[in-house]
Amino acid sequence: MTGRRVLRLISAAVAVPGLAYGTFAGLTWLRYGRTRPGEQAADELLDRVLPNAEVDECHEIRVAAPPRVTLDVAKALDLQKSPLVGVIFNLRTLPSRLRGQPVRASSSPGLLAETEALGWGLLTEDPDREIVMGAVTQPWKPVVKFQALPPAEFAAFQAPGYAKIAWTLAAEPLNDGGAVFQTRTRVATTDPEARRLFRRYWSLLSAGILVIRYEALRLVKAEAERKNQGGVHGVD
Image 1 (cartoon, helix red, strand yellow):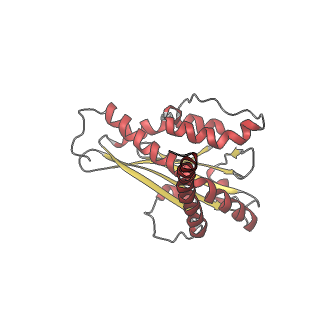
Image 2 (cartoon, rainbow, N blue to C red; image 1 turned 90 degrees about the vertical axis):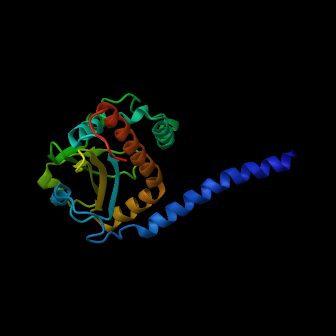
C-alpha cells in the first residue's frame, strides 16, 4: 500500500467522525430552546423547581429490579469505573490540564456524593422513587463552579449571566416488580447573553454528555439486576 493511499485512509477515518460530530452539533444548535409543553412526560417534582426549560433531555431503560434497589444503585454509581467515561472526561479536562490546572481525582464516592461535593444540591425527592438535584452555574467558563440553592430560591433565581440546571434520578415501578430507570436534565438561562453562551456550549459538548447518560443507564441496569438476581423476572 502506497504512502498516499495510507494518507487517504487516515484522512477518511478522521473526516467521517468529524462530519458526524459537526452534523450533531449543528442540529443541536438549531433545535436548542424548542421544547414544547407536553413533549415530554410530566414530572411533578421537577416541575416544582424548573417548570420551563430551554433543554429538556430524558433517557430511560427497563430494569429487572425494584425501584428502590434501582434508585439506590444509581445514587451510588461510580461512573469513573467506565473506560468510556474516562476517555470523555480526559478529553473534556485536557485544556485545563494543559494549562496546569488541577482536575478532580478519578476515584468516586458515588454519583450523588460526588456531585454534592462539586456544589450541586438536593432540590426535592421522593426517597423511594426520585431525587432532583440542581445548581446555578456558568458551564461555558474555563473553570466551572456549581452553586446549590434552597428549592424556592432556585426556582425564583434570575440573576443575569447564569444557567439553572436540574437533573433527576428516578425509578418508576412496573407491574412485574421491575422498574423503568430514568434520568432527566433541564436547563434554563437567566438572560439572552447566558442563553447565547449556553447554546454554544451545549451544541459543542452535549454529544459527550449524552454518551455519559447512556453509559449510566447501562451501568445502573447491570448493577441493579446483579444485586436483585433471582428477584424479578420478565423484564427485557
